[in-house]
Length: 374
Ligand SMILES: [Zn+2]
Image (cartoon, rainbow, N blue to C red; front, side):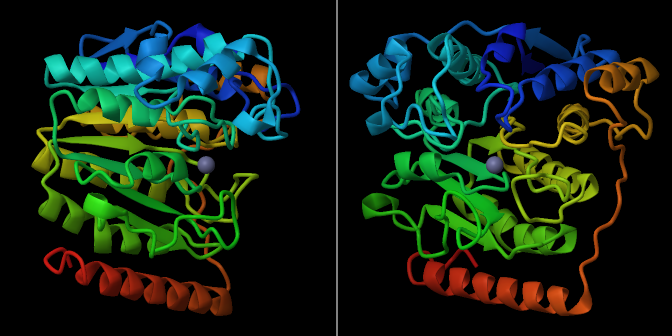
């Protein structure tokens, strides 16, 4: 069984009309999933309840939780910045998203299933601080809940930005292997996620980062993914996989400078599912994440659900949904396969050379700690 987490209350997580994180993207994704006939006997929708204070405290300090509850700007807690402004209802909306990922994880303690929280993936939040549009770190909360049953949890983050909050929270924990592939911190928020961030103490070697060159596209992403991720599965033998599936790597995304297409994105997701089936009994906790192009997000995350259901990706979108999209957004959504992005020869040469250096350095550093991985 696949449990899909979505409620109209996710629309309340709204930083305002000028903010890039437009909650309409989740509503459009949900509508497309429904119009595609995916809410059937194989996929059950769950409308999550807000996480309790006790649950939030698995990751966040009581002072920080209290500060969010007050709904007042307080930059000491990261609240009220341009990225993460305070809005009325921020506490409730953030708790509902966190509640989705926690409930999804707890369901996976009781039964072998996979889950997908469309509103989840808020990977930048820290225990005492909001950051990068993220208030509560639902990813880390889900992982903490999974620890009740599982001792080897693999976290895969393919969002365009580094999964810094999740990495930091489990930085010393060898039971949680975090992997993040993202546009290099030299060019993009949050400015971290370099190959030498490898974990600490007993967790040394259990944080893995692949910073990608600017304008990296499908072939670069798939090459880096294949060089690293299957080897992590083989070595770590995860019992469960948590995946942050942000789609702000897309060439049309306004916040990043990458060239991944929907075709490349779905290929990466397909591999995550294949590897999870092979090594972790198919136990996948999938989460949304970034993605600021409204033409892309609904199609991307509906494709994720098709892949989780082991179905081929449809070539056409339901006409009634296309009409809904035109009414709500204007214009037309993208369909699969979308345009292939080929940078100029010189740019590709630079990308290939930078990436090859990054992968070499990653393997060199990792082989000093865990020589058996690569
Ligand atoms: Zn992102």
